[in-house]
Length: 474
Image (cartoon, rainbow, N blue to C red; front, side, top):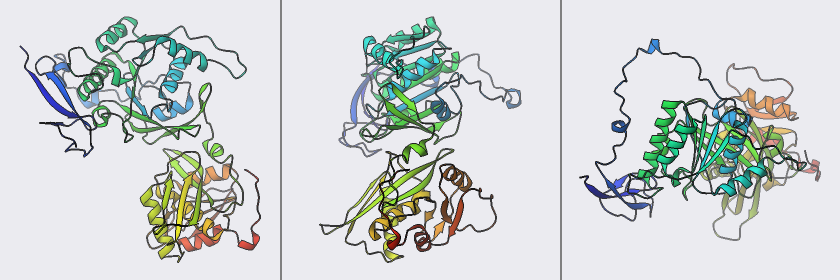
């Protein structure tokens, strides 16, 4: 008879503890320890269950090195993030905040893929009627007409993994979508659905099914209050690709970001706009992010950031205001807080800006979040522009990292950034001074090189007497 035991597992990192604790000793999170009951000998995990007596070593030279045959995905922004299409036998995890659009995007993908492939959509959270209503909305055109529902799209509302796999073996689809992995359970396990054990075992069995039958599987995962996929260390090591759907709930733009991809580039980004008919692809994100920009407005600067292999121009807004408290506030939205503190310190110490009594607010327009230091110069220019009430030249883009001594440092893929700025009509770009010879800079845009932050800001801002108020947009 199987021996039963009780253990306490952290829902965040998956580590177990000998007793119940208010705080996980591994990841340090509070209130994440839950009690799990399992029978040790009843369910074999990992290599014991997946062992194959017919497996044998092969010489690496005998194995084909051809590129993976991908299934064509008509949604180009989605295909870009995946690396060019869907790889048969791959397992893709899609995460994001509640209500951000994960189910909408995956159902939209299922509808498009079902034009040529057999697709099985498994839902453990919504009823068949709810999914049908969403599908009809996605199939509706702007003029009110609607497309027919693809005949090769199948829907299953089930949470028992054994039953799901039986339907998969019967139907033999090319693509399986599971919404969501936290609702799926294995009957042999005594723990509740959504627990670390259930999520790990369910994901492992889905991976085995994908690898043995060349079935492409998309799994939707919930996120925790900290913004990570529930059981992140458990899931991310099992799947081939991890995608996050990001965005501000008050903005219409959504970013599909790849943080792990065994079949393509990581940190690749696809841009979508949430409309009443689902997710609409944004072919030119830079133009969309700059659509409502005001010309000659103090506190506005243009940065060119790289999202994967794609350069994107975004507007960075800065605002300084005399504080009413003893300690001035530093409030970033879309940029790293510590990076903002560094830039404010450099402006204060190296350039002599009096910011000890100024609240500083920085915002990235469009709901984007910029992590790379190439936007440092734009952030500094936006803050200085607001403090001096002098606008930055409207046709100028700023690219560069700011050092602690007030110097500007070169950043990667400069030619790509400059070409994107020139394509959108920018006439001038201020960049760090390059040391040595490198890749030739593109034509069609005036490139001004500056050695220090002080020099760059003097080149970027209009003289105060030349300022003209304008509400014109570009």
